[in-house]
Amino acid sequence: MDFELTPEQREIRGVAREVALAEIEPHAAEWDRAHGFPRSLLDALGALGLLGVCVPEKYGGAGADFVSYILVLEELSRADAGVGVTVAVHTSACTLPILAFGTDAQRARFVPPLARGEQVGCFALTEPGAGSDAGALVTRAEPAEGGWHVVGAKQWITNAAFGGPVLLFARTDPETRTACGVSAFVVDGRQIEVTRTEEKLGLNSSVTNDIAIDAVVDADRLLGEEGHGFRIAMATLDGGRIGIAAQAVGIAQAAYDVALRYAQERQTFGRRIADHQAIQHKLANMSMEIDAARLLTLRAAWLKANDRPHTEEGAKAKLFASETARRQTAEAIQVLGGYGYTKEFPVERYYRDAKITEIYEGTSEIQRLVIARQILGERQAVASE
Ligand code: CAA
Image 1 (tube, rainbow, N blue to C red):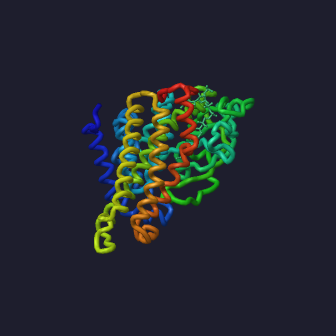
Image 2: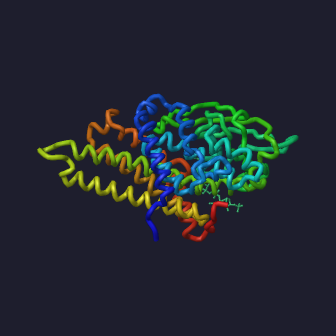
Image 3: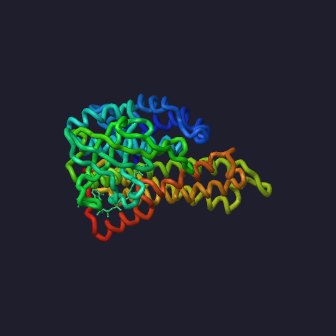
């Protein structure tokens, strides 16, 4: 067993940490208030290869492995979790499934602009009546001249307002009501209408939209086989959840960093609060849980990087890391006391940002269901393709 990162993984993490410290972290509070970051940030990340970290060079990416990508997500999220999710959805939930399930022609056409950051991708599965029960989706695609007529509405779509490609799931078999009979399509941003921008508790620098579609998409936009869309969605989320685990680790680490520093400066009863056992126990628990969450995340990432089954391990990583982030950002506020509750320190933002990691890309309840189905042998462990 080797717990060391490779020189390449360390180098990419270093690049991400450097840009996060210089270009992201100093602005995160302002972007939280302004509800957005400048598009030029994505150009800068694209130029560094961070919008296609684990995409082969032949398709415009940096050609690194999935572990490197996960390290990048942790660093970006440590600085600003909204930037983290933007990159995570763009990469895990749009670029990588096109790479995994696309034909050679689809890969050559759609992946390079995404990997270079010229376009920002999104993933449209959820609907007003289909969240945890994703198989209940009602957006439909009917055969039309030259392709498919896609009609429906999707909800809570991260990145839709960027106008880039949308990996969209629609029912192609009208006789079905569940996860069967669903197909995946790569839809152009111009073919959807953004109908709403969501106001959220946290993650304010990222954009979350409702969208509607009523358009004919060309036949060559079908990704994978007709009727296999739900499997594509599930395999995509298997990898995506590892990215959300990394995001949660980044948020928890950021909160811990602030709490640790503060505990060594703040004095009460004539000594640093770090000298009080009550605070020491909090810091010890934070450090332990973050370590455990990171190790679960890296194990799942390593499995995926090596084309091994990772459904259960990814769900465990996401579940544990997200609950750690929620618990430990709350503890960080507790260490800072009244200051932690104000906007003078960033821990209140970390606390708001952490909560969503227990909800999106599958709630904690769904992660437990996924884990239970695996350990009870109700689902076979599958690799990503
Ligand atoms: N890999 C590949 N295929 C899989 C799979 C996996 N991990 N898991 C299931 N499948 C396949 C099954 O084999 C089955 O295929 P066949 O019918 O061809 O045999 C099909 O998918 C249906 O599987 P299930 O019967 O297990 O489906 P289900 O209806 O019971 O649902 C579920 C399973 C796990 C609850 C699923 O609905 C789910 O994951 N729900 C949560 C949805 C979710 O995570 N949404 C996130 C939205 S995206 C987002 O949040 C992005 C963002 O903004 C950050």
